[in-house]
Length: 447
Length: 105
Image 1 (cartoon, rainbow over the protein chains, first blue to last red):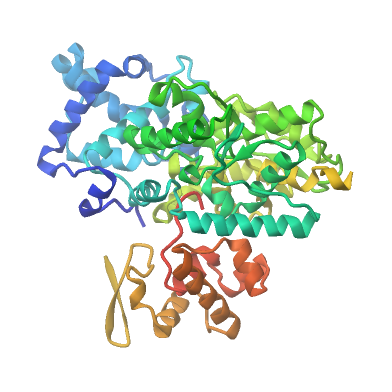
Image 2 (image 1 turned 30 degrees about the vertical axis):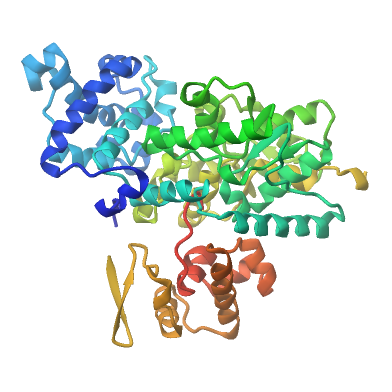
């Protein structure tokens, strides 16, 4: 099986157009020309690689597939060699001798393959002596492909749902209300308390943005958050126009990223939120934290991650977790967008240790952690055989910990890893960090 | 777009093998999909779940959350996988003629 691409007739629905095959090369070169004037940091990276090979053993994509083009320097080379040919003196004059090559249909085909076998996890950047960020090359290459009308069908479906409903799953407001009411009933059955999940309040201090998967599959995460906000009597709300932390625009189209982010900004301004709290989502965290100001700013609200907030409540005594609530052997999988330049590293650990006495770190961890293999939206069933290879390094890490539960505060990881573990014969439970908080939190009436 | 043939009629399915037009669904189509999804025979419990999914989709335009599906039909998460080996999203939803749930799931 291989990647399924969006049909030409489905592109218009998400504001894109197909460029005829005969014109693709010319258009792509124009795109690179535009980029080199806007994205100077990217250009520096393209010109700096010395092919030292430090990235090779650090990339789970290369380690899992053993495909040379998944070796980060080689992956970037697919783009670099074209950039050099058209935009550098040595490339134009010396051609192949300067590592420069003309762009052709075959190379575009390679871009479609290999820039969709990169998880944009940035582990290579953490080990590169020059700090070259291959993820930025992947993002640029994918944007060019998108502008040619070449994007995975999986992304078209999600983008379409986002436009229609404000979340990737395509949940319309009545469905969201039904889900929320059900979860409120579940929490009442469990705790005897009227724990609410407020929707569309006119005014609230906190705008909470969950991953839409949190009201479909990862409901323990949603309930953990609701219990926490109940315990601190927070003035919070969810806005059904943006029931989606995961900004997939970051993964294929800057315009889609901006539109998603605009929903966030509009919703926050509508309810006068002082803080926007992003739920357990990796890319959404990166997109919201790093890009809000440049996409739709300036904004007056703060942007925090739910684990930052939970950790603050814990350390200030606003919430208490029962220290022996979770008896299983627990390990933490650091999502890439939290641990590498995401600044959400120690918080999940403190939260887990506060309720799970049997916590074990995997090796490596924190900013050196390996990606789950589903990063950058690689959750398509079409490439399941690639995905399980991308996840092999992570699978080995988990086996070494002999953990019974792997905490993973990101929806993509929660979707990818159970599939990976099943494939490699690993029997382990998975879930979010807020799931554990929800299971161990001391609630007002049962103190 | 691919097609399957059920009772001599050509029915359109998408690249994941899910029904494109919900109006094409009938019990024979369900049985066909069941075969593809490693469900040997559709028991009463299978049909209860299939009907729940169809009704929920008709009302809300999406599949129900898995926890709710389990509770309303009286099955545990494990039992759902026993009944539908490919799971509630990929197995049960396909057999019930719903579109494949997408996003981070």
